[in-house]
Image 1: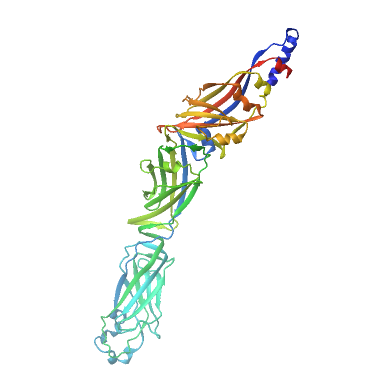
Image 2: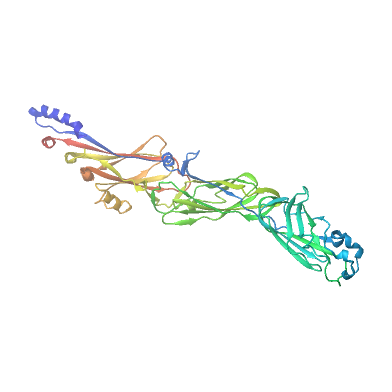
Length: 527
C-alpha cells in the first residue's frame, strides 16, 4: 500500500518546493480475516457428514456386513425302532417251533443264510431332507432269538439303510462281531458327514446265521430281533426342515470416523433426531442383536443394546430416536464407531430350505441430525484444520513504522454472514507470535491483553444466505503494535449458544479488515 502512495507524495514534494511541505490524510487498508464455516464445506471435507434435503448437516455412516449361515442345527431326530420276527429271518425253522435245539436234526443245526427282508422306519418329522455336515447313525440290534446273527461260514450280518422312495442304498452297515442268541446286543456307529438322507428310510437285513449251540434252548419262531436307529450329534450343511433358534457366527467391525472436529469447551448435549435403517436379507426369519461402541483417544461409550426381528427375504426396518437414540455416542466426537452384530436364525414353525452358504446380510445406515443444546453461557468452539488449531499467519510487511507513526484514527471492520440459525459471538486474537495465541486461546474470560490484542464481537446475528452484516470497532494506535512485525498470527474463537430447537444448517462466513487514516507530512518525506 505504501508503494501505491509514493508517486502522490513525490508530486506533492515538487509542488511544495515553493509552498512548503503540506500535510494530508490517506487511508491504509489491511484485510486479515476471510474464513468460511459452512455445512457444504464440512460435508465436502468430512466423509461422515452430509447435507440433507432440508439443508441441515447430518452424520451419515453405513455398516455393510454379511455372514454365512455356516453349519446349522436341526431338532435332534427321534430314535426310530423296528423289529423282525425270527420266522421272517429263518422260515426253515418254523417246523421246529417249541422243541429244544438239542432235538433238532443235524441238517437244521448247519449254518444258513438269513432270508433278506426290509422294514420301513417311521418318517422323520425333524427334516424332509438333510445333508449332514457332521453326525452319526447309531444302530443297535438286540437279538432275542435262538439263532446267531452273522456266521463265519455264511457271512457277517448286514443292515442296509435305504431311501424308501428311490431304493438307493445310503449306508451299508456291517456288524463285524456276530450277534449272539438269547439277548445278544450288537452296535454299530457310522459317520454321516456329507451324506444326504430323506425323511423316509427303510432297513434291509441280510447275512449268515446258525442256531445256538446251547441244546437246552427252546425254539420260539415268534421271538424278536429289535433294531433301534438313532441319528446322533447331527448338524446340517443343507436341509429342508424346521430350523430351531440358533446363533450363527458373530460379526464385529469398526468405522473410522473421518471428521475434522473442532475443539469444544463447555457443557452441551446432542438432541437431534437420529435413526438407524436396517436393509436386510435373510433366507429364514432371524433376529439381529447389535451393540455400538463410540470411542476417541480419551473416552469410550457403549450404546444400549438393540435388537430387531427380520423376516425371510428382503426387509427394511427403521429405528427412530424414540426407539434407539445415538446422540450419546456422537456427542463425544468419536474417532471410531465399533460394532458387534449377533445374528440368530429361527424357523421352527415351518419347513425352510437352507444351505450353509446362505447369508444374512445387513446394510445399516446410521443417521443423526446435528442439533446441539447448550447452557446459557454457550460453548466455546476452537476451529481446527487437519487436527491443528486454525491459526492464520498474515503478511503485514506493508504496515511499517512510518505508517504507525502517522496514525490518525482507525476502524476494525468485521463482516459476517450467519445462516446457522443459532446465536454466536466471536473473539479475534492477534499477536506477533503464535505461542502467545496458544497460551491465551482458552482464557475465555481473562485473556491477557499484554500478550495478545483481543477484538470482541459481541453478537453475530442471524442473516440470510447472501447479505453480509458488518460491525465497526474503533481502534487506537496502540492496538496496532503487533502489526509492526513482518507477520501477525490471528485466531478466532467462537461462542455458540443454542436451545436445541434447530439443527445446524447454513454456515458462517467472516471477513475482517483494518482501515487506518494516516496524516502524511514532512516527517514522512524525510524518512
